[in-house]
Amino acid sequence: QLLVCADRFPFTFTESFMTTARRTLIKGAAALGALSAASSSVIAQPFLFSPSTELLPKGKKRRVVVLGGGWGGLATARHLREDAPDLEVVLLEKNPIFWSCPLSNKWLVDVVDTSFLVHSYTAAAERMGYTFVQTEITDIDRDKKRVHTAQGFVDYDWLVVSAGIRVTYEPWFGNDRAASAYTHKHFSSAYVPSSEHLALKQKIKGFKGGTFVMTLPPPPHRCPPSPYERACLMADYFKRNKIAAKILILDPKPRIMPIGGGYRMAFDELYDDIITYVPNAGVKELDPYNKVVKTMAGDFKFDDAIFMGHHQAADLVWKMGAIGKNAEGKPTTWAAVHPEFYNLKDDPNVFVIGDSVGAVSPQFGHYPKSGHVANRMGRSVSTYIAQQSKGKPMKPVIIDNLCYMLVNTEPLEAISVKFDYKMGPEGHILQTVTDDNFRRQGLWQEDLQWYGNMVKDFTGA
Image 1 (cartoon, rainbow, N blue to C red):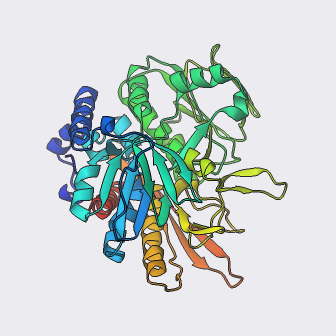
Image 2: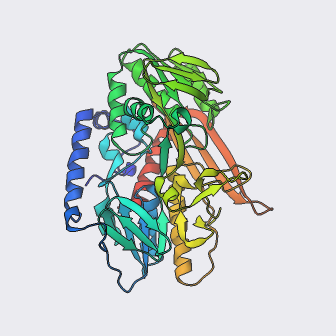
Image 3: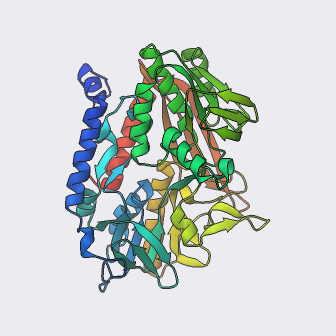
């Protein structure tokens, strides 16, 4: 079990801390593999079950089933045990361990090690008193209130879907699956917890120089400021290791957002000879084999790349028929939920939270698709289900968002952005965004404290 809370570390970065934080990739991978094996050993062996059997027979208690063990799903499961102790809570997740996307950019360049990102599902479940089952979810039957998995089916009274995103290359390649598979294999974005993170880390460490292209997804997409942070940390790594690299950021948006001022200063003052930012550069055509990308801002050749495909709601949201439609009747590609309660209009006991959530406000559209927002939504839905279970009306809980982004490692300096929300006079949610563009070590220290508090919240440790 690897549980790391940032508040265990002092806010002075000693030699011993940096030595620990900069462990080798081999050690990090070994720790990840060891924890995976340990976690898998305590989960019921799959061969004892079949998809047609009942995986968890229902008892007398009403049951909440949570699909997905990310920041939102873990928060939901943990807080339901406190808000509604009379309900049974089951968390279903295909991965044997939790891997955090927040702070993973820092892991790519060894600012933090693997133990910072990896946490035990089984330890959290045992500590908080809910049931964790590692299994693949294959389908959702809302008529029968049943979730089908590779190990059998699970019935529910309430369902919470916190399944993240899907990354698709269809807008670039259409039905050319070979091109999509090639791009995913060689130029993946590491936006979803998986082996892509390890592959990207190896890619960065093995880059010998040349032009490195990074495309950004069109909004809305997961963690809007994170691609710029990744570019900064890659540039920092190349600079420290004297690698003759040029990073081209191809952004479909007209300007850097959010934290535009802070990133602009970082690009100009720290990495002027490495990073080139290109706005209005939506991808028109990509030839991954010959390493050429054509954009609205021009054509670019590259030696290596990170191609961030379009983001959509997770596959499970599509399977359960929860995708919204626009005025033309076409799929919005995001879940259609109540803007305050996150449940389906035609199925009020089914909630979708986190990155899959569609537009919630005519002022700003989507909530930022961040770990912080997913956590807040999970905590809110826990409250709503507790109210529903007692026959009480649901009372809206206003959430918030906070993101820290590291832009320099020597010294360790970060910038940040805060999102505040309130209900407007016309009954719509209003957003206020506050950028903190002045990079400094104090914000990096705050980032560690924030992360430590979040880990403590969803693990109970």
